[in-house]
Amino acid sequence: MIPTPHHDPRGQASAWVTRFAPLVARGGAVLDLACGGGRHARLFHGAGHPVTAVDIDTRGVADLEGRAGVTVLQADLEGGVSLDPGGVDLGGPYAGIVVTNYLHRPLLPRLPGLLAPGGVLLYETFAQGNQRHGRPSSPAYLLRAGELLALAHDTGLHVVAFEQGEIALPRAAVVQRLAAVRPLAASDLGGDPEPRPLPLA
Image (cartoon, rainbow, N blue to C red; front, side, top):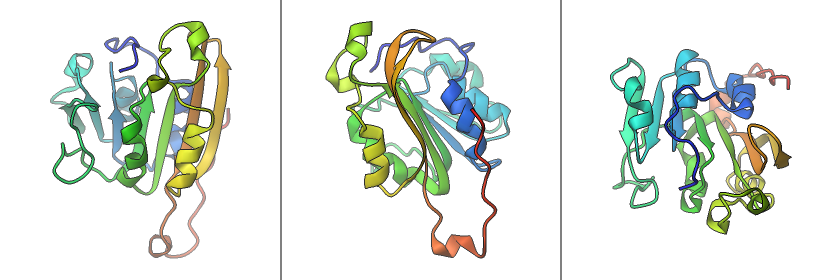
């Protein structure tokens, strides 16, 4: 797992996730994968979404357990959790999936299948080049150039926004970010849907 501060429930939500959170259907279920301290589970729960918070260590979200609309799932995402039938049931489909500061490549192509039509994938983590800033530095935990963009294209997601490069805050790092939507099927349209406005930067 990427070494990040996992157990500070007071941590601020990612600016990227906050920016694109309004794209998630109002009241739709949200999966916070590798949730750590639960900053994004808290963000969406506070906005009226039912949330499922998943991590190998759930101490950071222990205070959320038992709250209405919150499911806390302790699971080792790298040691046998499967998103296929027979594995740990992550539920779904979801109106939104959030992953930050975490990369386990076998999970990547499976995430779009957990999205409902119109569902939003918000992903932000470290990328190649971060070695010069410290940890993580292993290629296993660093996205290759354009890797999230390729994931979206390969799985049929519509890209709303994509960024990669260096950031200075909250600390110097090289990151990659994606906001992408699973397209509605023709049977889901039922006429001309109202487009959801994009949040302003």
